[in-house]
Image (cartoon, rainbow, N blue to C red):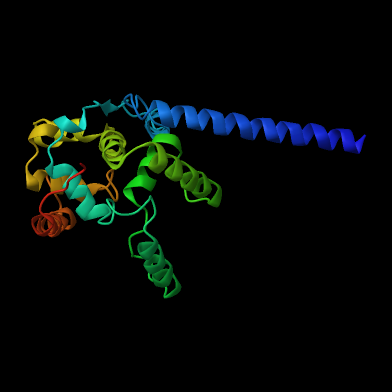
Length: 232
């Protein structure tokens, strides 16, 4: 009796794992070629708005990376992940620095999450800090780094990431903050959008507060030193 129950549980676990791997591979391959229409975070934010009795706000307009100003990929790399073009999804040096700082009790240090990890989290997962979610994040990061190239990861990132209250993606942020298109973002405008990414519901790209204004100057300085970001 116990043996039979154990076998059924094992088969259930095995089938669930097989379905999960199959579906995750399917969607990672699918999103290599088509726009990501919605993400779990978008749905969660809509639910939070409804629960709070707020007006439903979801602006998400997908545009090809060819129609996004080259200033924006450069700005987010300079701000979020300067080793993006070189790592395979994880910045081990940044992780080591974050661990060392945590051991010293430094709670203000930015995390070591790469653009690839943020993309995996935004597209496939839910917000949170549990070890289970982190494990899934690692899994999906490995998958997208294997199936997608860096340009596609950046394209999905810039179209899916939360950039303000109900704003997702470069086109929506450009339209709301600067009354322009993502293709026409200037260097300082791109830097302003990148500056709010650590907490896009707290900070505003336009008008910028003191923190964002300071970050804009820092990011533009890094962009000037970097020069050009080339994917091909």
